[in-house]
Image 1 (tube, rainbow, N blue to C red):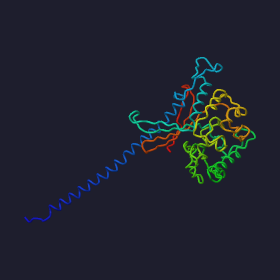
Image 2: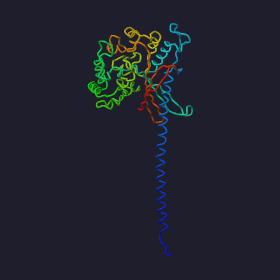
Image 3: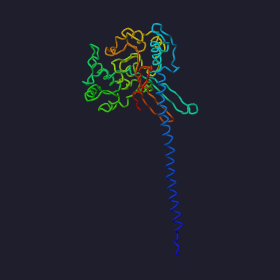
Image 4: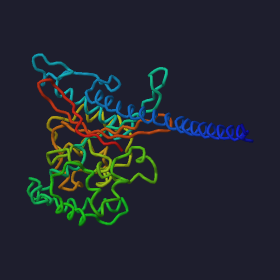
Length: 360
């Protein structure tokens, strides 16, 4: 039999080449795995952390968080059989207002440790009330697709009210007056308002994506103190043409020049204490109560308010819809969401329901 010179050597080279290829592929796949998997795990952990912010907010809104507990005093005038300081409606309204004045429109930060909590990271939540925003949906005639003439208030001109709002919005956001575009947007709509963000899909409003949702920390930075956020200015979740002056959003305050720009900080203790102890939360008369309780907060008397705005102020403190902004951070990964939460009452008592969830 004739020998084939170099056959064994060639076979070895081929085997080494195949082995090198296999090892290289395993190396690259392993490197990709080691890089990607920790990021994917942290992303899911950050999402879990952000979702847990909703649970914390629900606990606080139910007044179950002892950190915001206030002294409970029964009001003999409102006491009924079987009632207590915790269930007395007047006392509960005061407790609820005390909580909101301390927390609304600002970050609450919670730090978690792996050993202690099972998950390491930082959670930030910000609670706002939808009744402190301009009720866009209830001020628009859905059939005619125009602004209502007076929103049930004789002598008011809602159209002029919105013209002034959009003019100021353009000035603060360094854009042109978008009122003509908004009129066109109303005319082209073929369905009722269900989402405040759908306006971004229309021509001329693409830039609103950058300032759609309120961010508390931006309010404290010098270059962003006058930012107006679209979903912080308007709401579609309030069914009645009303706003509560104790809950006005940062963007509403900027549009109407209400008070110093101390957004992101709790209401001064002396102001909040006077409001909670003396203001009638069941039937406020804002034509007199505003000057007594809110001038120190907003630095503007009642007569200086636009008459359309003053006509929207509701007498009873009964907030029903809230937005909760949650940022969950694990390592260098941050996940953001915004939840719309409705507060209702039925035979079970106070009930909270998540109406909508936005991943930002």
